[in-house]
Length: 437
Image (cartoon, rainbow, N blue to C red):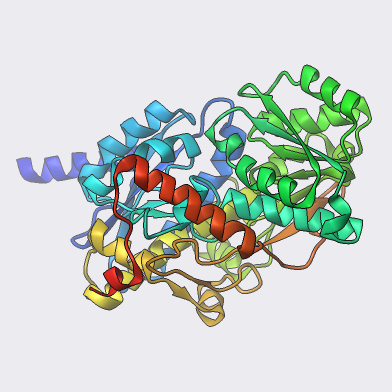
């Protein structure tokens, strides 16, 4: 009787903590999220999409019959708290970790090789970690900040009539003064050197509610374009300041963390014309995966957040991030045994051998949302495609065709930066031959 009481108590505790029910066979996934603090309006829909997708996988029968269990840990977008969450949850046999913060990614990157836990960073983290030869445990799948920056420059160049037309232009980067905000700078500096545009760097102190001095500089220098690398309240504040100073929103391009509904909804028509690069997807209310979540999760009263946000930009980012991690587990099962719980090391192999064809994506409910992704031993990103969408005052609408980041620019930058990291850490990079061993 005492054992039964303890089991019931454990089940209740898990329910209170937001953990899925325990199963005899369960694959544990930690969820580092931030639903409090200055970045909660943006972090919450991502977390809702991530958790709802895990619930959907369980509703579909798990991963080849293996159910997913998970636990959220509140980080407040604080690096120290993120590391604390990681340390607390890793002992439960973490399949992988998604830090949801570039600063936390830098810190956890040092721990992952020892703990043998993959660090999955969908659209953030260290751009050079696309080099799987050096960063064996890091997976910036589907795009990095260098991809985002290059795609934005390509979109601007197309508007101007060609990349050569950027020569002599002024481009300002208004960025979150953190490892996240600084990530695009090496790519932009390289492009500026090659093309000949003038790059102006304008850091904004977190959380970014005070930007008047920054936009005074913008008004004085009158750049041809402004790139916004913000997060949370910084984004809407920047758009409001642009409106106040008369800077055209159609000449502003945000990163994919500055291009979602919370960034523009309070500004409304004042944000009309504002552009942002998208990480493949945009708002996808008609996607099959969205319809499945509405029917199988929200339709049964099991939704994690409000029903009306399902399919919005950041919600989709969270769902896509969960899907890519789950598919890494599924790929691992193909080699190490279907119906079995995978270790972090086995999941690492799966993430390194992803082959998400369009047919597979369609079957998962992501038709029209994403392009195929294929990773390898040396390529931990797997795809470098993006699009631009534009706020029309009421909703986001795609305003460009697919853009592929220029590998002639990005690959050498990745290789050089990763090699420096390897030298600093005294690491011996893997080669494709090492991967076959």
